[in-house]
Image (cartoon, rainbow, N blue to C red):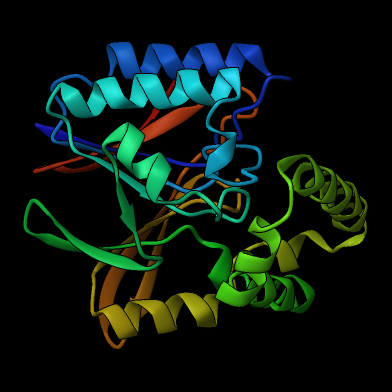
Length: 239
């Protein structure tokens, strides 16, 4: 048996081939698994749970609901694009909303799960923005606005972010190694799994004299993939 991990799918109407790949993954790879963990950025953006009626969102929620109904536990962690996913989404899909970060026991190995953006501490401007939008007062104010207004505001932020990313040095958008070591140290876990950086790989870190492994999940911009974790360890599987 095994547990599956995915992140950074960025599902949206503009990328129907990736949506279809996701549905096929749920249909062909997930059944019989011990659990499915989605570690953030399932959606390109999420304006609030009142957008569940949007046809693609309704379809995604429905197929995830089938996963839960089949007996495969479904766990969801917020990413930087879909941090407004809430209780209504969890209820419709039968999923469990996880805190970032969360420690789980995977076949005897304590494992730290994160989206990964909090590790990118060199991007000071982004971290300040993240603090703002994760504030409950800010979120309540944002969600009080009409859905169409929220979506327009998100589009403006996305356009601005796309311009800024082109100007940022690539290294500041990757994890800070001191932040990684601190996360290992706080959690006391020998393994970490996260997404966000779109730099899939296995890294080994020496933390206080012990060897720790860090698995970075692949994004789904081109082909997608998942991490399979079982008794024998971890295996990255491309799609």
